[in-house]
Length: 260
Length: 300
Image (cartoon, rainbow over all chains, first blue to last red; front, side, top):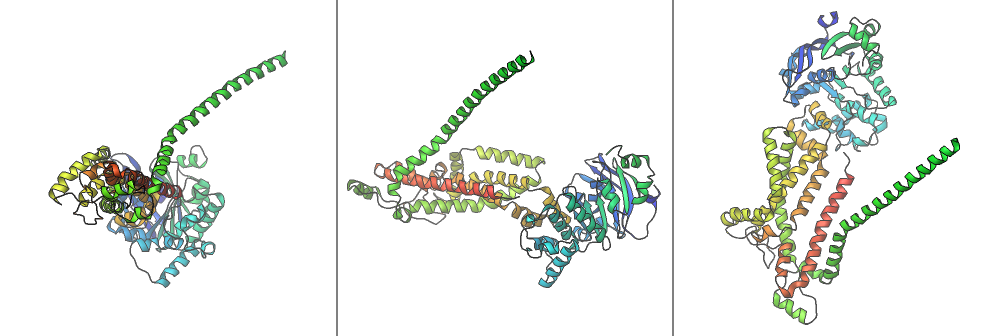
């Protein structure tokens, strides 16, 4: 439990007493506090319905979309309250990748990468555009595969390629934090492996928060892990320590497969 | 003993299979019969229209206005086909459907988006119910309403505007519902991808949702056009009809179904009914086929 309350100096995100309720009184996340470290992979794991996705979506205010969802508490990005930032600024700094690959079906591969700029009306020079597209696609190791078909629709790619395209779309804004909501659950093992390798490379430049209900994935690629159960943050600490020596009995039971 | 049991079992199995086989054949026969009964009217209609109408379907049918009864009578007595065509009807139909679409498409799509976004709210539910009721209102009643609103107070006489207003009200519920259904088929994750990039709400609608659902929207529009293109009753009370080509929204205007009605009332022009009906049928079937093709090609 100690990790939860410890002040961390170079935290990129600080989550303070955050609760999220769908409709009044029905809480999906209760009173979670944690500090997310810069340039690390932090995994949020837990059984289905424990509130891990809900917590993740609170971090870039995706819940604003649905008026019946109430978010309480405070989330600080670089010590600035995220509710005091404009959604465009916030989401430029915190990118998000979803469970299923969701490239914009009407846009080409290139346009998908710079969709954030295009749709927000940020004009780019042609050279800037090409630079961002190439850099983002290189970052996700997709450049070689698609450099000759940049004008094709993004939906022509395979599932794994589409998901990497979606990561590239998030990277194009040069965010500080990338949120990934079970990014490999809809993918085959080979694509999954590629994305996991990619994430371990990306953490040099970005802070990564990864929701997964695949324990071994968390063990493979994360530096820090959170274990959530019934909306509560049960344990948060170094992944290795948590897997070898869990402090809470519920964590132990989850990790040893007594429930899932 | 054992072999007898097996043999017995096989016989019963065979018997069961046999009864099922016969039942299966009977049901298949019934299904084929009823599907033939279902498609026979359309086949009969089209073959009748072609056999009766093809004579009149020449080039002048599309580029000349309707003849008067005297010209038709002379041609008939001489044993020729009736001269002239239905250009005034074709232009009138296109003109009025165009005006109606101009009103119905933006309004219908916007209301459809509203219903999609706020489907569970009380006000949206009321709007949805009213849309359904509107869809069931007899077209002649819509013609009457248009007569009292537009003919009497806006254009002070029968006019293309009044006709297209009646068609507009008929198209509206069809476009609203098809827009809503189309948007419901777009995965929410695409919308969320837009929000996760900080894209403002109106741009999500206009730059992501509408382009993604474009084929569905176009299909809905085409089907609503094919629904109103053959409407006669509301046009009788509003557009009235005209012998010449008219493209003035304040003047009476003809339409293909109106011409069919006029030809029906004139014994000398009966031959033109079939050709006009054939053209109308081809238009409606064509629109339906195009929308079917768009639906089968759409990749969401």
